[in-house]
Length: 361
Image (tube, rainbow, N blue to C red):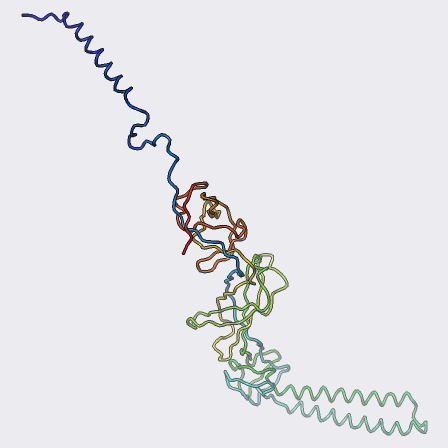
């Protein structure tokens, strides 16, 4: 028998109203303190729990920044042995690489002409003195005028000067070492003609090596005479040569903005040679400085920060760093020295965040 759909319309409307009323009743039954869904924060909660961090105290002690540079080794004294005049080599008294004493004869040149000139000058001087003595006797009897006697005296002085010059030229035929040192290559041969200024050999006093290097002007306040240095040279292994700063230049290079420094290194065994390229390491003048562990530094956009603990909060501070040493960094500005800086856990905190701090053992 066919069903009349019109008879069911009131029933459907009634069921729809009852379903809506049930949904509303269920929603009103949820209480404010009920368990929230995943990702929801409980009502009335006080934020995230405090982070556990490790702190270290700021250390105040004397510290000098480490300065590194490169320089060139120079002999304590160095000279090229030359002749003052053109002459012939008659004797060579040294061997290449020999250590010689100050005043030792290195080369002898032909002395015949110089010796003859000296003999002539001495003879003329003797004659001039004899004439002066005779003239002095005649001046007593006024047989010789005062002007004539003065001329004879002048001739004596002239003769003495010529003798001194002749002796000097004769002395120049013997070339001696001006100081103790080691000779270089021999550049002349027996019987060869040497001209004025021509190099015969070199002489270096390397008992002490002068090491010259430059440092940036920013380290000017850290330099002082007597600072110890350590130097190494490629080709000499890991050997460290110790010395000290002896000279600081009075001017700063306006182009490189650096200052030249000279140090001296003892070289009794001759291991160092002039011209060596050496690396230099020295520590600046120690001054009272604040030091903190390197791991406390938080770099950000070219700046350096640290977190200090104030009460139960981590406070971020910008600092200006200085020199470093293994595990430590100098702080030039930003801390007073009474703070405790966070060295572990900086990744888990933010500025002003609550922390639970424990001191580093």
